[in-house]
Image 1 (cartoon, rainbow, N blue to C red):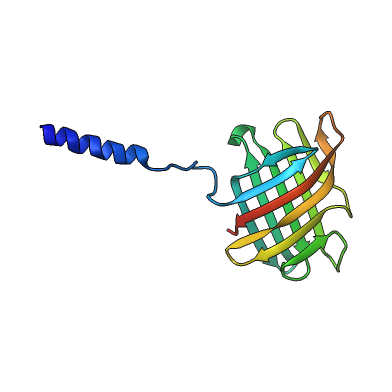
Image 2 (cartoon, helix red, strand yellow; image 1 turned 90 degrees about the vertical axis):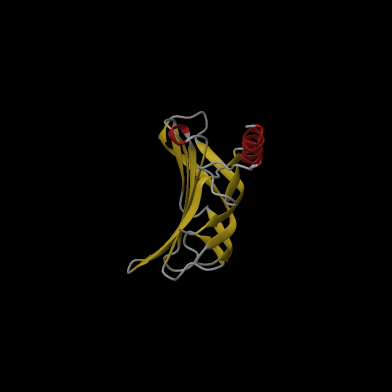
Length: 162
């Protein structure tokens, strides 16, 4: 009986010492940005989707902060007539390239970019990972908030491509 108790305590110790990660945060993935002077982190569900169709190519990077039912969200989109590769993208830079940013405060307001000002730089992209930076001035498009614009600076991402 004593041996069973010692064995049980040993397994309990091993179990409790195991490092646990949040089930909703993607390990190693991050999206960070300074929004109106406040540093924000959007690691929950952070991911990228790359698509191609007859209409062109797209890269969508998304992430949330907070719990799912009350989470601010950021979306970084790049659309183009050519495959998305390393480089800097801004609306109208070449051909049909388009860049958009969206920052949503759940149940409060949504900010989106206006033509010509957002910038996304892809520093590395593969079939499994994309890294880079982003910035832009967003305009309040739905809801009500104290500020009519949201200025995003120091945006950085390193996310898995799904």
